[in-house]
Length: 140
Ligand SMILES: [Zn+2]
Image 1: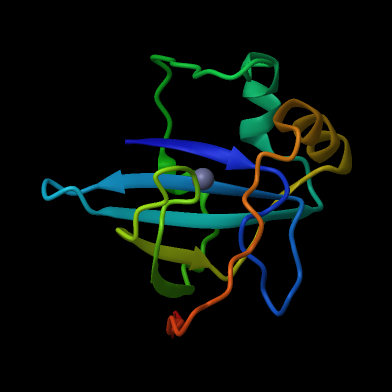
Image 2: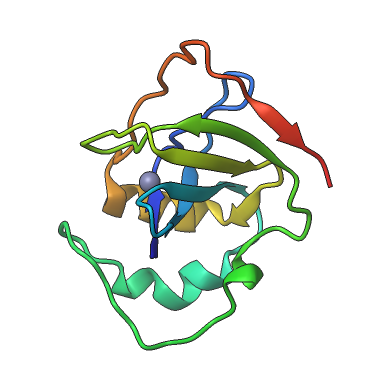
């Protein structure tokens, strides 16, 4: 359906937040969601941010584009992930989401992450208790 970003991350790994997280949102015909999430860590400059940083809306809203690019090229090569059944992180927070959290991080430069954090201004939902949810793992 769409993808969007959060700063800081909405998930933690061993209690650690990441500077940013991307969500690729999919919805099935029966209304359930699957979200593939990946974290950004400080490192090499990110090509996607380089191309689109100037287009990210500075007020709430969406940016649409006819540009075409390979979504797979935005993801890390190794697709190992954590999986759990959870909820949307924004209202109505329905418990209808299959979360796939990639274990391998993407990178962006310090400057890009700072610029991004300024635009998105802490648009993350704080981590929730697991409440008995089971986290499964798939290692490629
Ligand atoms: Zn999200």
